[in-house]
Structure formats: structure tokens, C-alpha cells
Length: 475
Image 1: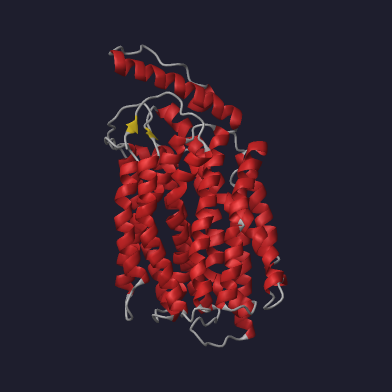
Image 2: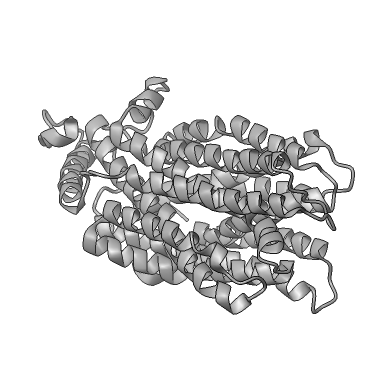
């Protein structure tokens, strides 16, 4: 378990290497389903926490939490240890996450807002540490334009497996005579057990390359501003907000919509959610393949448009007809898997551009600021939808009877929000210039400069000049 600090280009990653590195996507993606789809309704229906309090708590936690990622990103980019830069942070994040999951999924009756705020913050600290380390490490593992699409496609596919596995608990619970509460708590234990196992696999089996550059860099607020003000990154962050808020909005209302509007049971809705998530596996690989043909930005525009068209047909699903709902869920799930995949891969390309222009490693900070964008969107998804349901007269308590007007309002909220935001996400990358040709030029210049820095470090010779930089990049 040692770090490779050389500057020679990494060889093309094998599928087995990608799968090994993707192991931590299993618990992280499982939590994406459990926390956003099942935990808020669990707090509301089983523990008796009001929808307005849940929405307010989630928004408060996310607003506090957004400051954590940039700090983590700055620290990660400056970290150098005998076992690497990102590996150590992934190891640190595991026990933090495990403790928070126990406190949330096994929460006692009578908990208040303070309890939820504290343990949600701890949980997000753990997921931020592990997720940020994974993204930055992945950008350094895969250095070529198309290879990044492949790697993040595999990460997404493995994540689908984790999400599908956690969905099995609510589905098998009823035949086994278990309650819905058991299903949610089983999701928590699944993630708690899986986290240390997958972190160990990644930490001991994946090499880590630290890019050439100064080992210590002074902290400066301009580090934030230089990235936030960069037009390409601003577009990426806005795309992240929009493509997170759209599906997040849908997820927050998912169980309510399929139960009250479409007449499905919790178990049937869970099966359909499983179809949606399962479709993400082939969807991710097809998205990565399409990106190799038409480019990442065009692929993002195609997937957001097609997703919106597919989701618009949800009201055509006959009530209680499970088979009729499957095609809609397959379509939307396959396309939604491409949103984050493309943004992650495109950010890695921009990270190379930034390192060439600034001469400093900024990939962790770039992903950290992207995480901030995603967290803002996630907070808004619950903070907007749950109080909105209250305002629209929808009742979420177990056994509550809703009027036709309340259900109609639920249907409008379920469809309009996701379609509007997802389409905005695709529009953010219209006219994108950082394509495969331009990225190949950037990588060539980076490798030439890294070779000079490595030569200087090994011989004591200081180069008088570095290779000229593409004027398009410096601008």
C-alpha cells in the first residue's frame, strides 16, 4: 500500500482494476437510495417527525455541510503521506460514516430536530470524505479523455449494484413477515457492514499516482475564487445543481406519487424503483460508449432531453399496473445514470486544464466545489418538496386520506420540477469547447512539463523554462 510519485503516464486501466477501485461505490450508492428515498418518510411515518421539520432539518444540514467540502478539497490537494494522498482520506471517512449510519437508521422514538441535525452532519462528513477521495483519485487513475468516461461509467454501474442490493430489503421483508421499519433498518446495517470491507479492498488493491508539483502550497482564498470564476467550471457546477435537483425532487416525492397517484403498494413501488436503478447499469455503459462517439457534452444534452421526455409519460401509467410502469422506469433510469457520470468525467478534464494553467493540483478542490453544488441541490429537493406538499394539502401520515385535488397537486409537483431542472442542466453545456482534441493537447503539455519537474527533482537541475502553453488554455 504505497504511493507512486512518478510522472510517467499511467497505463490504460483494465476492467478488473476499474472494478476494484469502484468497490466503495457499493455502500455510497446504497445510501443515495436509502437516505433520500426511504429515511425521510421513515422519520415522518414511523418516528412521527413532521414533514416541515424534516424539510427544514435537511436544508439546515446541507447549508452547514456545504462549507465542509471545500475545506476537505484544499486539505486533500496538499496531503502527502507514505500511503498516498487520497487513500488515507478514504480510510479516515469510513468509521465516521459507520457511526452516523447507526445513529440515524437505529434512531429511537421521540427524536427532535437537534438529534437529526447532528447525525446528518456527521453522516455527510463521512460520505463527503469518502466520495471526494474517490472522485479525485479516479481523475488521477484515468488520465485520457475516453478512459475517464469508461472509469466513471464503471463506478456508476457498480453503484447500481449497491443500490439494487439495498432495495432488496423492503421487497423481501413482507414475504418474511417483516415490517417496513425492518426494511429501512436493514438498509442501514447493510451499509454499515459494507463500508469497511470495500474501503479495505480499494486501499490495498489500487495504486495511487500523485501528480508532479510542489508538495506544499500555501492556503489562499483566491484558490476558491479562481475556480468558481472559471466559466467552464461555473457551467459544470450549475449543471450539477440542475441535474441533481431534478432527480432529487422526483426521489423525494417518489413513494408519495406511486402510492397516492398510481395506486401501488410500498413493495410494488420499491420494485419499480429497483427497475429504475437497475437500468442505470446498462445506461451508464451506453452513456460512456456514446460519449466516445459524440463527446461528453453532447451526450449530457442527449440524456437530459430524453430523460425529460420519458418522465413526462409517468401519468399515463394505469393505476396499479406494474408491467405498464416498467418501460417508463427503465427509460428514465437508464438515462439518469448518465448525468453524474458525464459531469464527473468532464470535471476531470477541466482539472487537467487548471493544473496546466496554474501549475498546481486542484482536482480535489474542483470536485469539492462540485459536491457543494450537489449538496445545495439535494437540500433544495427536500426543503422545497416536503413543505410544498404541506401547502398543497397533501397528508403524508400513515392511513391518511387525501382529496383528489391534493393528489392532483402532488402529480403536478412530481413532474414539473424534475423536467424543468434536468433540461436546464443539459442547456448548461451548450457550446462546450473542451473536447477530445483539446484535452489531448493539454495532456501532452502536462506530461512534458511533469517530465521536466521530475528531472529537476532527481538531478538537482532547475529548468530555465517550461514547455509553451496552448494560448487557448492560458486564456
